[in-house]
Length: 337
Image (cartoon, rainbow, N blue to C red; front, side, top):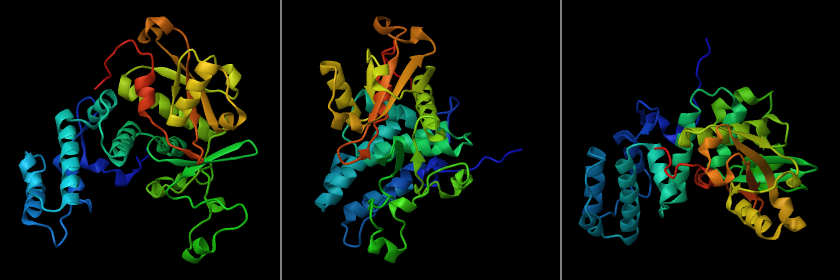
């Protein structure tokens, strides 16, 4: 019997419970983890109001916090941090599950820090992939919550984590990286059959690259993640296939998986063409079909939906996984909670 291996321990998924529908329930333990953040731990010079608020919430993380309690904090930066934190905490408590809290942000965008929203995405993916034993799928899922550095070279497309990948130097590894014992980008391992089994022990390091070329395991894993993401949050069944030529797409309905891809899709929709520099930034093209066409709005029922993925001028891929949730032509106006 195979043993389920844990991954993404730093996400905090151990601090959450599951309800009968398999959704992640917000717990006191999870909320306490926010109170350990350096922005919220009172420094030695903190006022009594700040210390008192922090101590009270450690005892009862879901206790009501009044505006006057925050207004009484002497330090302006601390007041701002607590205002944001309590607004975020109240949002999580109000919606009870991580999935519902995330979907509400999609319905009604709120000005929460990107790092908080990315954490929700990671937690939802961790829950969704709990029984996954495919390292390529887990690595592909990282694209949905961590910016990636894309490298195109002679038809190859490799992505590596922006935070953990040093700047690429085509001539030599920086002496500073060598002095500190840090790998150059050329030394970042790409996930393959030979090293895939090591993914679990290093999953929180985000230090392995992924080959997204059509026909490679990483590309297949990525479309699998997208399909499972939609199914988990919208309860609809879809199939996604990767395309290799832009001319294969009619763009009757399209969704940009990131801001740059949305911009490119809009250009194609309005003008029918893009210049070579813009085309070079389009690194992914996919055709999505509904397995049950009645899930679609009638105007485009039975038509494919095209997904576009692109890198910015800085070479970074910054996915917006909410786009595929809000951008599909689904018949029901309400998202699943």
